[in-house]
Image: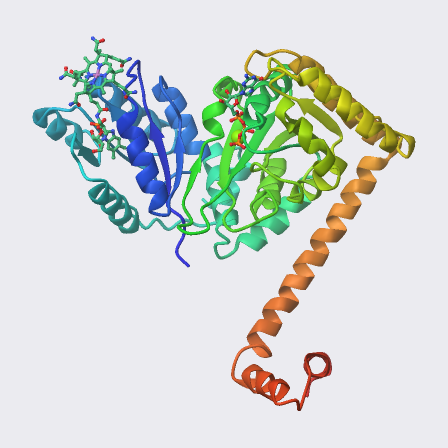
Length: 139
Length: 314
Ligand code: B12
Ligand SMILES: Nc1nc2c(ncn2[C@@H]2O[C@H](COP(=O)(O)OP(=O)(O)OP(=O)(O)O)[C@@H](O)[C@H]2O)c(=O)[nH]1
Ligand SMILES: [Mg+2]
């Protein structure tokens, strides 16, 4: 039996657009994953704390407010500082192509924009998590 | 460095990873649990259960904060149902716990029930052992929304808070068995709604019978989790129940019973696995079933014969 993929979905900043993230949450759940949604108006601090406590495989961030160039790097930096650098950060929302390129360089694994199909999103998560086999010593 | 060493050094990341190992029963998890068991036993565990949507998460949201303010090192485990079809789950409890002071080191872990039907996940009490060994002294466990008979929580905690709402009023009669019997404290939540007083009154009369036989009088507290009304009262009763259990020696007795059950579970599971591997696989069982259908054997004789073979060898 393969292990459940655990996903944190978060809405940082003052952005109140939550339809997209809810669509993604339902899709990932129906694909058999365990999805933890943090709710609106989360600080990078809260998102990173939740990601670490919940030991999720991936952190999905939804931003439609235009603040993606500051919020994504803030989350990634903090994750690394706190020892959660192995968790993949991905996301979606209203993000122009040139910003996508810059963000992917800055450590965001993948970004999805309006119209993205949930099938593609599910597929990406499965592949990304499977590719990232970590081996660690328990005892 | 191993996760366990980092855990001993106080790394929250390591704690969280070890919980995943336990939850997924990854190789070596039992050995880690053996060690964790030996360094725990100090944590007080409060279960919060009740029907779906009664306000369990909203109550824990406040209670965890009160415990942290009182100087406790607080952890929360919240369980939500996994889909029996896809195995997926939306773990939504954390969303209702936004006021918990994470900056005070409160640790929240969401779990999917993953096929368990007793209101918790199979691994919940083992995860609690890890939190205990890590140094948390107070744990809140929120069950999935339960009906009458999902009562696993009694084996996983010290104080049970049963959460009801005014609308549960008509259900008291039906609820008399099971859920109603395991309450150490009742929270009648959503007391801002009509019918709360009646509900408290009905509960009081339902509990009067029980009070005669028990030294503990089950408190009934009307709360408004979202409005933060009467939460300190509920918290005081939890502290009171803890003191009661400690002073009467009932806490030690309760934990002894829980541990006996746990050992039994480990034993029975090992035997079950052994039987599955040795006796119950292969064609022998098919053959027995056919013999029974032909009237040449019966389930009792066949089962006994298998048992004798298992116990004494054939
Ligand atoms: C509906 C809507 C609203 C609704 C939101 C309702 C709600 N609860 O969500 C309301 C009316 C409240 C609203 C308000 C505002 N809005 Co508005 N809104 C939209 C609109 C029309 C559609 C958004 C939507 O729901 N799409 C449907 C969902 C399913 O798609 P999605 O969110 O894009 O998600 C998909 C992908 O992006 C991706 N995705 C998204 N998140 C994630 C996360 C992960 C992990 C993954 C993998 C994928 C992923 O996958 C999803 C599925 O394909 C967009 C325009 C547009 N065409 O996008 C503007 C838009 C987003 N809004 C905009 C603005 C400016 C506002 C307001 C500031 C307007 C104002 N001046 O008052 C307010 C701000 C509100 C707030 N507090 O944040 C702008 C944003 C501009 C920008 N970023 O530069 C847009 C782009 C309109 C525009 N062209 O100007 N809005
Ligand atoms: N009116 C009112 N609503 C409340 C109160 N407490 C909680 N709620 C609301 O009731 C809904 C359910 O609350 P939760 O705390 O999620 O309930 P729960 O028992 O944890 O639910 P599950 O975990 O899904 O079984 C939410 O919308 C809360 O805001 C209250 O005291 N009064
Ligand atoms: Mg809940």
